[in-house]
Image: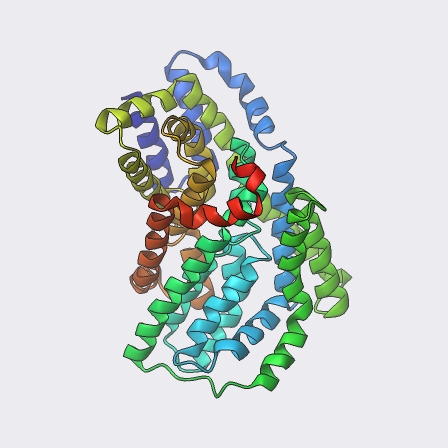
Length: 431
């Protein structure tokens, strides 16, 4: 009963428009007061501070800064033009371009909202100017942006790894196959929608154009190679990789492409600071909220409740996915992660579910949450860019949501799909 009351209050505050970090803090503080343990409240600041001081979490502001530098530095435009040269000649070609560009950019930014904001302006403008419905363009852009946190680097994977002790490198590798599958399911949806609506073809294929756009974007395309190659090669850690990505984006965008100057740096840094503070404040507040859950033995209560329904791992996984999807409708994805990880990890250990596999499933569920009202962050970002109302945008999104849900269930119930690559490249970690 206490568990339900705590989460009911939390979701109620969110629905009333209270920012998620404040909602978590107020819920936890109020619960301690009602339980007669107000003397714990002076420790609130300490718990919040401890939650954000891990070395691994330093990757978050640097990946955010790298994404903003790429958006200002013309890298997104070059990635889009290269993707257009590759698949623009197909029926509904700019739809495929949208997805391919998102998959390429995913290896650079690590954040869905940054991808939606950066590539979204370029993609939606190009598609609407070439005869595509604005709703279709906006929905595909929102859906494609969710590939960003799945294909490495990934800010949610950094958070999950820092909270669970699971290898972030292995999590990064495990994200490749699901991310590619997400892109393929979106392309299948584009195929049928483009033919039904008679969307145009973007000119005949041209090897010359492919080569020209490849040369123009080669330095940008090297970023994911450097990041992932450096991590796998043991040259730097994921946190250090975020710093390398930032420096590389600064050099390529500011010095080579010359898309921004020193006068633009304060604005780029300030925007990155604001975005980083939003994320880290959620993590800090969730640290205090998680302390409440542990203090009241809520994870143990959840285990007893779920195992009382079934002792079958497949059923337990299905119930966890359902809970994550419901929470994702009302809370920001990172908040869902940091709240539910302490609750579900003991359950995962009890049923011997691979923590890497479960991490991928959690991130996929949170990506669905980014696209579902009333709190879908990517919905609001793309709606603001495109001018498409949330309701119309949500209706246009359902084919892509079904595709992401299919990939989520595939990874959840056929673990070999997501684990074969990390087990192949890191066999010593698989043992």
